[in-house]
Image (cartoon, rainbow, N blue to C red; front, side):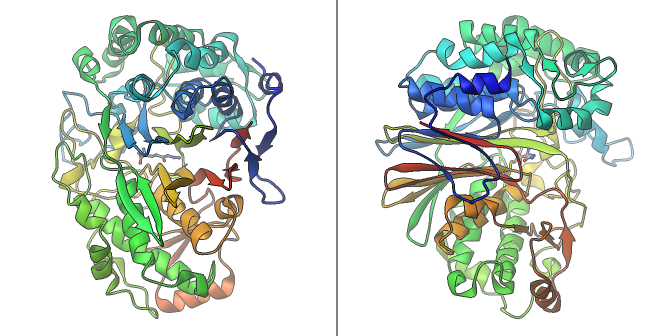
Length: 563
Ligand code: DON
């Protein structure tokens, strides 16, 4: 399947764009919209909407399509969180986060001296958590959708069966993962040709993945967690030193959880609840920021960057200490997201000086990782239902292992656990007991699928990829719209900063801070790091005055499509 011709079959499509948009105007549509990181997946979702499906049907179609067309992060071998708000006002979060296998242990990534072996939690089958995506997407479809599995999976299966043209984005990411793919023949078989990575213009064919998707389409959850596919997963484990068992797969269930609720300057906010840290950190930061008049200080001013950093330091310190899987750890989440708590956390914020992170809590400084993969997508339908979903394999192409014969990549989400207290993960995030490894436990996440409500109606749908930087990206886009009056595309495009408590530094994007703002902040005590990547890559939508406005992030090649 060639990307452009697939898109052109959608004669009904009125509005198509690939970020960046020169005019900074978001894409506009009247009846429904999908924003995702991939053109084919977006189109697959819009097709369902156009055929009368609701936002959940379309979101499930996008999820399965991404597993084929966006192997960097889209997946059936990983997990995620789907936030749903229906037109009748009901809201829920489908938690399909991966779980630690039953044989997992606290010491599984330590050597005989007790030192962490990072490689083990990142590459190869031992790094994989029990995948949740198939269970999560099917749970959403069965409980909130209106269409058949066959219908919502059709485009994904077609793309896997017929093959698709490798575009620039995919070629670049395959080249990046190639040295690690080379260690796994099952991965090489799919993503390499003649000993090198597939290149732009090559055709990526995924017949094994098509067969797996057919099994899911025919048999539902059992098509993945039982039978042939489950046997292939277990065989891959046995071959490569993994520990996931058939029992782990049979026992996996997606869980519906109540989203976290909060507010910001009169707008209601719904976001992800634990085992994602996203919503908690988001609300704590927004509650702190709400105590200051950001609008009068101006976007990009040293005072606003200072307040964003100060809020980040405090909320990420709490993340490290308190957050984990609520089924295993008691989490004071309601207190952390309360306005009173934000008031006490704000007391030490001094308008003239940075607070050293060491004074907020103790910890270890590390580098921020660079190659990671997650992806966010937003869907809204004409009936008033909205969905905001983030899925991930964790690193780029997960643990780099394709399950031989089943054709999909496994995640390396085990690295999101605290491998050892105080030792940072690949995103420089530290933590403790609350996020320690235990059999059957879900690892803490930063994913922040969010819905902002205005006058009881969905107003913003958004989320991002970028490890620990996801949540600060979501914070800044909300602030850009609500405090600085930007349209949704301007809000996504605007340069972002990031402070996650440890390391004690403000991470900024190229051209993201003007020199005199940096020197003011240096005088206040801040240190800086330039990121050559980005501070998160977001996908967002605004719903206003009867129109849907889509805003893909120019930091990636997302596509908003409406009809
Ligand atoms: O769940 C998490 O927080 C991480 N596994 C997310 C990884 C990520 O965002 C990589 N992104 N590009």
